Image (cartoon, rainbow, N blue to C red; front, side, top):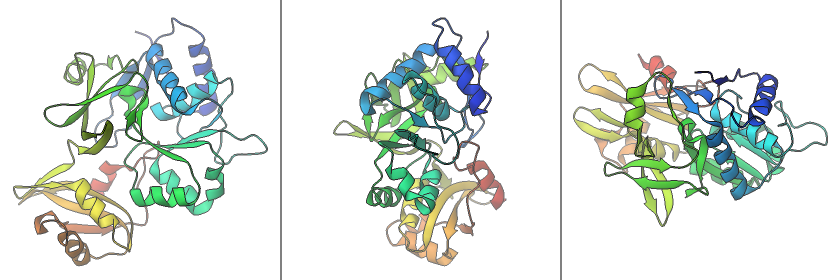
Length: 328
């Protein structure tokens, strides 16, 4: 079967997507996931699914030109191009907004948001809406952005949902969310993918009765989705279940910690060890005491590695596999 394959070169992909959108019988687009938490998957998205995603976003925040700050070959970048083209304008390219042409919208990952706040907060204030996706948005980072006058929306979604489909906890138009008996988030929508290319077994486990079974745990509180962690975020260390998002959230509250990722890495005696990777200045003993003030001592990190910055994937997400490699 033929697919639309994007290159990652923005100008080339804009041309490809413009032609693809113009033909109702166009083949599906093949999107490779980032592999931030494991092996990449090849996600097959129909033209109808992509259009449904773009339509639901437009219904929530409006239409207009977008600034493309993400790789065009990943789903978030592709959707920026699609939304802008459907509004009748090419997306604005480059690391800076230039001249008198101002885009109305931009989609960023948290790392990009943090860097722009450090360098050019005024640039972000010029957007009608700044979408933040690709990972959880630290409440302190959000508060900092809002204090700077940036209009943020935190998005939740995946390549399998044609990008973000839940904005600030509220599903977009035509998107339905439920919590499975095991606590996982499930999503139904016209924007869902068709299948994983070359992996029918994974497709059968993930697409069940028209619902996409995600790898995230969550809760619905007053109709809003709250994602509480991933299925691989619970580390079993010495027989103790340690929820790494809770440990990371506590470490982020430390005054000398700027960024943190908490992962489980193989350990000969305990099976897995809880390891914190930190941008900041905090010792192992300080981190263990800080976590133990509000959580069981058994949740405290076994090791703390200080780094100057986190390794990133091409789409701006933190490369958790490379972080694990630093430990071992």
